Image 1 (cartoon, rainbow, N blue to C red):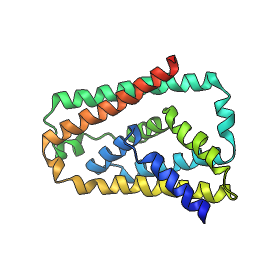
Image 2: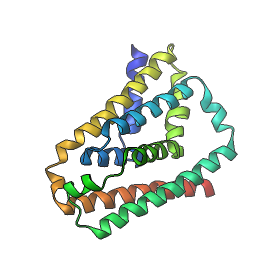
Image 3: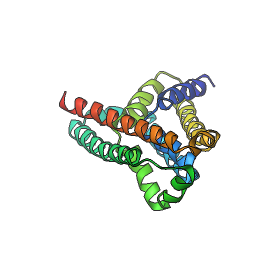
Image 4: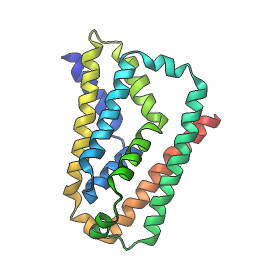
Length: 201
């Protein structure tokens, strides 16, 4: 039980910080479009990566610099593109909650974006596979630790996705959407910049 609680606490602390994935889940929750599928994709993806880390794949990935560099540059390029889209949306302005709901992409586009924001971000691998995997080795039951971390992912993403509707009164105003899009753009570009710096350093 101690391992499960420790895994839950670590998993929650790693994903609570605002990031590309969380910003996307928040936006989908606000528009109430494909929320279940987005939350499920993010949670299951985390579960797969955590399982890989607990199984000992963290050391193997750390020993493959070519793969790590490719992931860094690919992830940075995608985040730059997505951030540019958010800035363009903020620049155009005039978006209301109703307009955002009407303009939201279809299920296939939403699923692809959720997968890309998860699997093209090298920091996800560092947090789940490498960090969670290495910490789990310190506990007698690595399985319990991993299950705790997986539970944290499901609790967090579904709470964020479905809890976003509590902010709906704020986002009936177009200005709030501009602020959100600027924030999303800054998060995406900030993460991209850190990836480029890591690749060059």
